[in-house]
Amino acid sequence: MGPIPLNHPSFPELVRVSARIGCLSFGGPAGQIALMHRELVDDRRWVEEEDYLQALNLCHLLPGPEAQQLATWMGWKLHGWKGGAVAGALFVIPGALVMLALSILYGLAADLDWFAAIFLGIKAAVLAIIVQALLRIAGRAIKTPVQRTLAIVAFALLFLFDAPFPLVVGGALVIGGLIGKLRPDLLALKTVPPATERLPSPWGATVRAMVIWLAIWGAPMAAVLVFLGRDHVLWDIGVFFSQLAVVTFGGAYAVLSYMAQEAVTGFGWLSGGEMADGLGLAETTPGPLIMVTQFVGYLAAFRAPEPFAPIVAGVLGAALTTWVTFAPCFLWIFAVAPWMDRLQRASSLKGGLAAVTAAVVGVIANLALWFALHVLFATVSTVSMAGLKLQVPDLATFDWRAAAIAVLAAVLIFALRWSIVRTLVIAAASGLLLSAFV
Image (cartoon, rainbow, N blue to C red):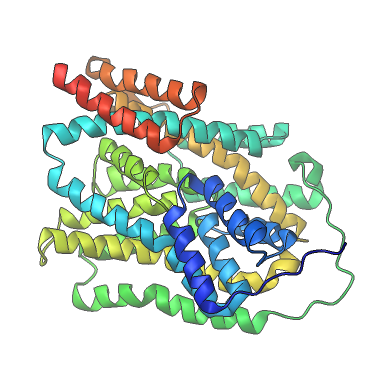
């Protein structure tokens, strides 16, 4: 009995299924990738298993949310640019609309006691969620002593020396590329046999994609420059999140540390606790976790709205953030997808990816510790000592309520294996209850 032939969907079918995936894509990248596999490979037979896995590997090589890029690639595979644009956009739009509504509510109600109590519970639960992500990624990424060393060095550079995130990722990429070329076994890389036939050149498609999507990426920034100038907060938002889109290797958790560091201490757009609140909101919405950037962009513009009304400015900030965060994802896919066969055989590139993935474990460990300090203590100071930059909490400001809820969330997630959304609901209720009686 031969293999089951593939089905080719019509464009309206692709639109309908892409919208369904976008609305149901809870559970982070692992759940989203599994959902797409079931819908597109198992149930509908639109894509071969091997092609799906190759595309997933390609998306891991690129900056940005891999699940959204995988959705874009699937659309491109089935209906070209039009299919890729629709499938990628519909993966983001449902979550973006929900996140915008929650951001508006947060901006209006952030000073209310009951609202603060709910988010006390949510951000305490986020600690357990980040630890879960850390353990999962470490189990997948750390296979050799070299990878373990890269993770430890990345953590030390970020937490002890306040090293720039792009420098840490770029260094890991270069080191991994050299190791992949010379000693791939040190990164547990498998040898890929050379191609047996000459592959067609994809340069034409790549150049067209880069020209078109660079223009699309930069269009709103040109409008901000012309009408508002470089001194407006929207310009700062657009530039910062455009830069972030280029260095977002390793998933949302990896880049959150860098984003929090700059948004909180660099620009002063929000506090560390509010950053944890935004992550809690993003955990409850469909779509990529990196949607938390929209929350940051909303609050930044909401709090410096001139010449707009605060909510109007916030919506513009959220929309601009989402645009410059996800437009590059389409650029990467449309420019790089034609090169897939070649990329699968590039030992240096695979080595660089393996090293970056290992370093991401250290990055997420830094994020977990940073959030823990800002959630469990009301006051955290930066102390410079012997070349180090240490985050030192004021022990007198320890919040036992947040600690208790974090322990409860850890029990629910690790021992009882509850879902993230269910855990967040219990944590929010616990925050409200403890704050009412204390």
